[in-house]
Image (cartoon, rainbow, N blue to C red; front, top):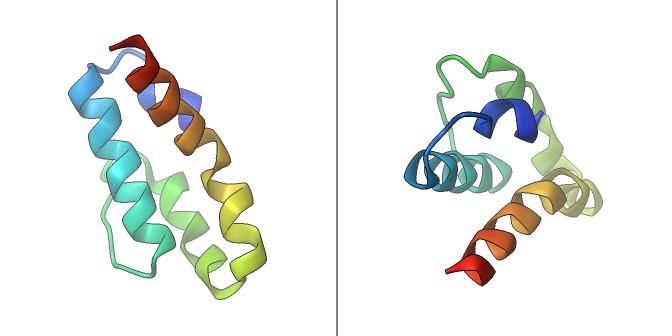
Length: 69
């Protein structure tokens, strides 16, 4: 899901999506416009053990990009 969401995006757009996804996992209401399938994961925040699973790819993206800088 993350790969499809960030494919073809700029660095800033990818980081914005990662930031919004992180907010979604913290229970905040976030609108993903064209990525409604990401909003389907909003219920994950009710299961703390699953939050790490849901955010693993996004955290790897952020870390990988920061290592390139």
